Each structure stands twice: as structure tokens, then as C-alpha cells.
Amino acid sequence: MKKFVLALGAVASLAATAHAQTVVTDTDGNGTYSIEELTAAYPDMTAELFGTIDANADGAVDADELKAAQEAGTIAG
Ligand SMILES: [Ca+2]
Ligand SMILES: [Ca+2]
Figure (cartoon, rainbow, N blue to C red):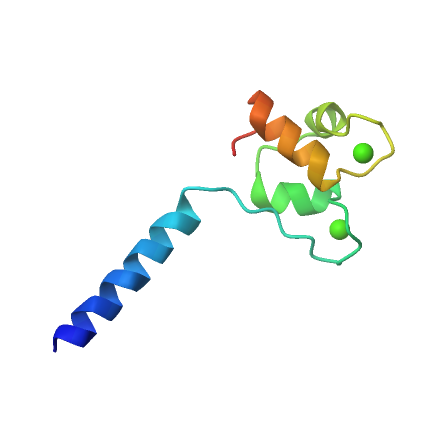
């Protein structure tokens, strides 16, 4: 019984960790985030906001741009 309770606690803390952070998934696996992929994580995403995050304006957000935007508070971390 004690083992079961411990396992339950581990699952609960994992869930809390996942919830504390917005995870953007590279759904098509091309190494960058499209506006569709960002919208899945940030429902309030707009083309204008995407343009702000896409610092080098190449039409895709890479991991560095995403991190910079999160650190700058442009989008939630
Ligand atoms: Ca992608
Ligand atoms: Ca970019």
C-alpha cells in the first residue's frame, strides 16, 4: 500500500511540472515552429505576435526565438 501511495505522489508531481510550463510541439518535425504549431500551445496567437517572435523574419520560429520570446515575456513560458 505504501508503494502505491508513493507512485501516486510521483505522478502528481510530474503532472504539476508539465502544467507549469507551456510546451510547444514541433508537430511536423521540421525543426522549427509554424504559426499553427504555436497556436496549438498559445490559443491567442496572432500573425502579428508570430511576427514579433520570428525575430529574423524567415517565416518560422526556431527554438532560440521561442526561448527569447518567453524570456522577454512576449509569450508565457
Ligand atoms: Ca514544425
Ligand atoms: Ca525565425
